[in-house]
Image (cartoon, rainbow, N blue to C red):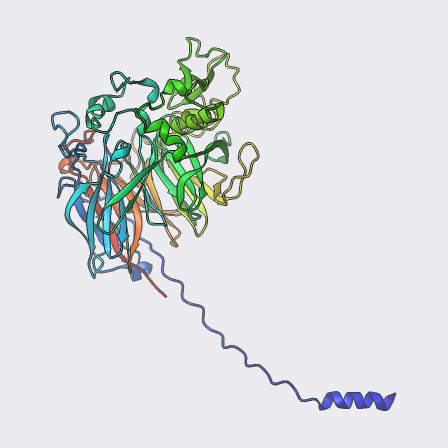
Length: 602
């Protein structure tokens, strides 16, 4: 045994050693790319009648070019920008006050590239409004310039034109997702006179402005249009009825290309909505949800859950809107004003929507509808805010404005311009003796005349019935992240955010731009906010009483740009507020950009 063991050991020792594998040479980690950061403006010395841009922070020097700064592209009235015409090409009537032949309310700007050609589509935020097309050229130094005449596009004439277009987005698949704000109230529409009770804008302009559109009726307006453009500048457009009808500030598609967040810019009683399309990059059909904010009492934060308003498609809804016999409000709902005691009859439900109490119930289907389910589907889209209120969603938000998203952190934010009426406890006032099933006063947030930005992370969730939502990008909390300040003697201190409006995220930068639309500041500001640290830096100042609006980030070749509009600046830097309405009594709105920025590369 001993000799055998020695033989085995000897055999083992005699085996040659395996060659050693060379060790990989450690490579240094790549230097992180510099982030886009700014040095804040001196808020004690803001100019009265010009746009002032901040300088880049020293650590962002790689982003700078010799031309980096604010650059106007075109003002309203130049080369046809802002011109409004009837579909036959004839101009509007200048004597029809307060409307003129120009809309001086430039808003969102979509920069779209088709082959080697750049086009800019600009929202003209009037009622009636329009979308202007301008060709853009990019120089070798990155500077952009507007070329030739601006002209209205007519690709939505078949659907009544465009009504008060506001914010927007250029989608990942290259289309322009638009918006229609301040939907006309169909309950008070008189089809005989084409007037809406109490709506001076509609009554003063639209029946004539839309005289050649095949009939003027309110259900044609308040939607999300989507445009595509070809290399020669021709456009096609469609209104997405499946996404619901309310006061659309913006419809923002996140990075799964199917989940869309929709803000509702209504002053005293708005909702917040989410649309999940049936398939990616096709928004023609899907499920619509309304938010229920289970707000933690006395705070500006809380859980967000989603009420399922059902599935619908554009094709199913179109016959009820674009036909010789469009549906009427009284075919969808039975509605009445509350009695002197503030209550409703037993068959109607007391709801709060759009800043008023209303007695409401779905109508009987009648001959127009095949079933109660079909009627509910149409009602959920044509009267989305009312239907959401009936379903128990939260409709007490105040001026839902911009929506921003950062894919790298999967965080989404909603700007709420203020919190001083329907978001406070005791408003809306619930009448004594109310015994209905709906919670009519769901929110008791702290008073804040300056408003704020709210949001959280996205993930999986189910609706309020426990059914899974077919999206991985569902917002489940609405917590205030920025703002919440009070005014001092009726003014907002210049060094705090006041009344946020449009907001947008910069991909890969951890940065969100927040624009102001505030009467609390003489010079409204554009802020750069870092959610990770809470840092807020003012980077643009507008002329007196202008708002900075319609901004969005674009990368063209090796350069980046933040396109924006400076809307309704005051004449000659006056400190008095500018007059309301799309007239020519104050400075022309300016379309321009912050940039060009050199996109850093490894």
